[in-house]
Length: 331
Image (cartoon, rainbow, N blue to C red; front, side, top):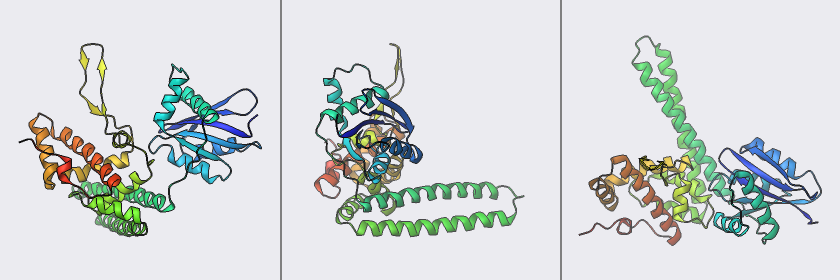
């Protein structure tokens, strides 16, 4: 019997499936919500016995991160974050024909049993702090937009008491102050870390990426596994195309999947819009797509996707934005 309690976890956005080998010859399987309560339940399940747990989680962009942090912070649980490509090849070698959350969890359990264990190292505290600041700022901006909508609606109704409008205006001012203070705190985190500072400077070298957008982009991208490719970044952001066909005669228009990190996707929208107006090569790429028959929103999404590829290259090669690499118009 192995001295470790082995566990495979298949994570999705809303929940995660678990397969545990308790050493009795029979697997324990279950499904937990992918939230703080679900994470605590899994920790309690894993730490019931005397054997030290070893957990294998497949890297799924952002969905696995909070779970892995909860497991690592428990102190007596070892975590391995496996590359999806590696686990896919492993499952193919096991001749697995079906693919469900349950079978994927079993496959990850077998993976941690047979493969060399490589312990996961959590992101630096500065990166986690930056992400926390960014997420809070985004939540406040949503609240501010809601209040502004209420103010606009109330101004159109003469019966609205002035005290109501004044209350909304004070709330908006308070939110603005909070956003400014948290943004400055986030920038202090960036300045305290050499790598974050370099990457932040690379981001703002793009005409269209201002400080606020750079903070969000940096926060969301810095927690991703180091080995992810640009295409994996695109898929993680939910900007990858989704094809839909029915039978042989009905084929819907290609749309982006939107299955991914909505924070990253939202953070790319305004920079892409501004860059398509003020960054020469980005504007040329956008116009090139328009002349080929793309609708404005389709062309803008393509700019978002290509901009994410450019950021990946900037981070990889430690270089500022180079428009000539973004798009070269044919003579």
